[in-house]
Amino acid sequence: MKNSILFLKSRFFLKQILVALLALFLIVVISMQMLAWTTEHGNYIVVPDLSKKDLNEVANILAAQSLRFQVIDSANFRSDFPKKVVISQKPLAGSEVKANKKIYLQVNPSGYANISLPELVQVTQRNATSKLQAVGLKVEKVTYIDALGKNMVYGVKYHNKLIKPGFKLPKMSGIELICGNGNRPYNDAPNLNQLLPD
Image 1: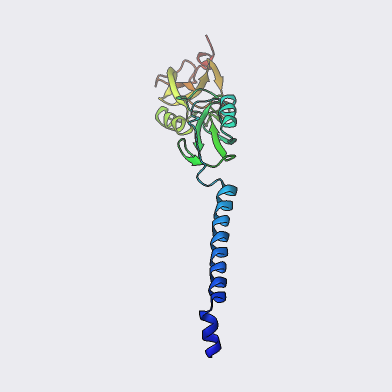
Image 2: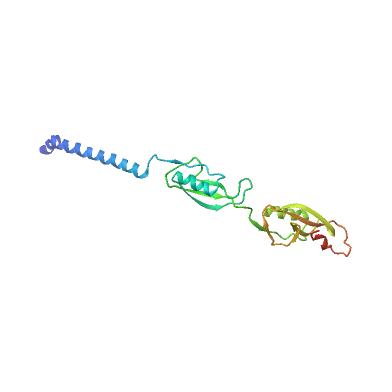
C-alpha cells in the first residue's frame, strides 16, 4: 500500500499523466481540424434567386458557384411567368448550402395543358358555364338559335367550329355556347345550319 502511494506521488507517474493528457488534447484538436476540413465547416454558398431564369442561365449561374440543379416537375402553366423559366426552387434563394448541393427546380411549361371538353349538350347555359369553369375553360360568347329549350345548350364552338365532348383544347380557352332562345323553330327542330361557321 505504501509503495502504491509513493508511486502515485513520483515524478515518473506525474510525467506519464501529463504525457497522456497532452496526447489526448492533441488527438482532440487534430480530429476537430480534420472534421472541419473534410466537411468544409463554415464554408457555405448562398443560393441565388433563379426565378424567371431559363435553364441555360440557371446552368451558368450554378456552375459558377459549384452548385448543381435538377428539374423535378413542369408545374401548371402560369401566365404571370414567361414560358420555360423557373417558377420555384428548393432550397429557396438566400439559403446557405455546401458546394455541389443540388437545387431542385420547377419550370413553367410552354403553355396550358390540354383538357377534354365535358358533355354540355342538353344542359342549361348556367350549368354548362359551371362545368366549363370547373375544368378551366370559359364562356367567351353565347349565340341563340330558334329552339324551344330556352337557355338550353344545343352545340359548342371553338374557333368558329363545332366541337364535341372529349375534344382537346388548351386550358383557359374561350368557347361559344349555342343556346335555344325559347322560340319554336320552323320545322319543330333546331336549325343546325345556324351552328355552322358563316
